[in-house]
Image: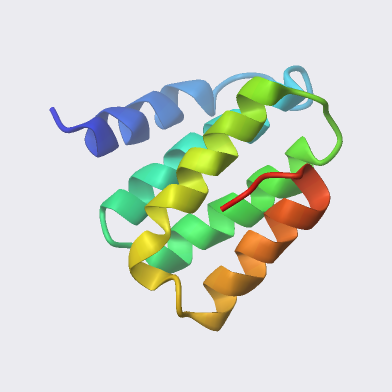
Length: 100
């Protein structure tokens, strides 16, 4: 099973968790699943999940969570020239202090 497929399967299982209980975990899960979508060449869905992840993770202090967002940003490499990608990278730098 590919890493992307495994992440998507894991996401379905994790989505069953009660909402609002593990904020950091939900934000990290969104970053991981967003990265899997990027690896599957689905930039639009990946960015949607990336933005949701930042919405959540901007409220917590976690170096581990920031590492997942950094990995997400690295997976954006094929689309670096896209305005939506540049905007997202800027957002993660501003709101989370995550470098591209």
